[in-house]
Length: 146
Image (cartoon, rainbow, N blue to C red):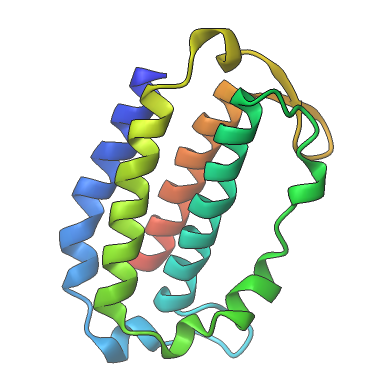
């Protein structure tokens, strides 16, 4: 789990200064009406951090059925009005939440890392959920920077 946490830390440390270079106008730019702006993508990543945080903690508390805690991304992004949020605040929230998640992932007890969870449509281990979280984060950062 240490490697996953280090990958997460490296990703946020690398991305933070680049994110802070975006101004409000660029951060709010939607490439198409149905596409998310960088603000909305980063908001989605904050939501993803919050949802995965719950998974990491609940799984270690013995909860294996995480289906009731599924995330409806478009609804969450819309209800939180990320498009009108302050960009610097979003970047700070995203960065510090993920710094905390790296700490949480580092401290996942080994006996829970490979426990089977019902998260999506197929069983997954907590290790896979953490790895997938970092992959997902990197995918969306690539979207913002392209």
